[in-house]
Amino acid sequence: MSIYTISDPDTRFCRKAMRQCGGHWNAMRNVWMFACAADAADAALELFRATRATPAMREELESMIADSTAVAAWEYDEAAPLELDAVSFMEARTMLRAGRAVRHLFGVHPLEDAASLASESASTDARLEAFEARARRGRKSHSAR
Image (cartoon, rainbow, N blue to C red; front, side, top):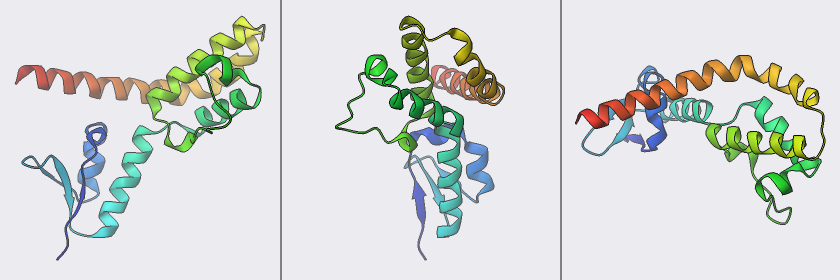
């Protein structure tokens, strides 16, 4: 019988999903263990969903790359393209802030970014609050030890 494991430290942001996918925490090895490959695959998908940039964030990052905002905002190099699917939620948030600041500096009207902010803010705010709450709980539990 094979045991499938996930040892990514970001699983702390989706413990409930890991358990719902049939995972069992092994504190000795700091890994989630799964009895079948399908459960491990479902858990990996949940991990990806919980820690990666939203589609709206990726679209806005793509538009910043297309209009060269990315070059000034985060020193984007077209010779080494950025894989947006691999960008974490927090990295994307930081990159978007820098890109919006550059757009405002170079004269893009603030209301042009307002539409994308409004569409993204409803889903992102709730997700960000949950993300930060989990991080605070994690820091509290580590400091209590």
